[in-house]
Amino acid sequence: MEFAGGFYRFWVQSDDGVRLYIDPAREFVCQPPDIRCAQRVEAGRYLNPILDRWYIRSQATDHIDTYLTPGPHTIILEYFEYVGPASVKMWWERW
Image (cartoon, rainbow, N blue to C red; front, top):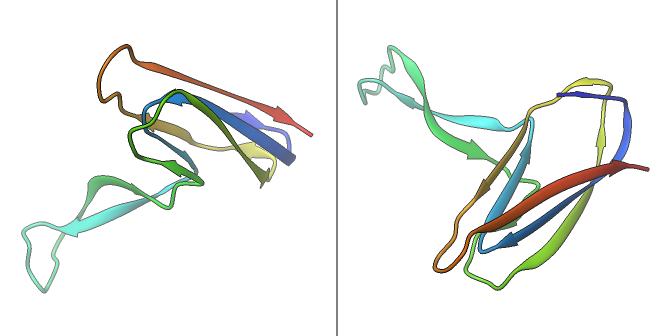
């Protein structure tokens, strides 16, 4: 997604857990699991969320402020619902 450079506030409303990543690094593992590590593959796990509320809770709204350089950025939102209706919403504003 393309962003103009500047400060942004990212809002996330969720019930239950949520993680927000911007331009995340990926965890790598060796295939096959060998000390020589002939081939590295993505393990499927993102590292270092900028917002981490990965626990059971009632609906809540969280925000995080960050600076983005001009250009494309990868935004990833993960969430889970423990029981009941699922609910998640994300938005941002430049300031």
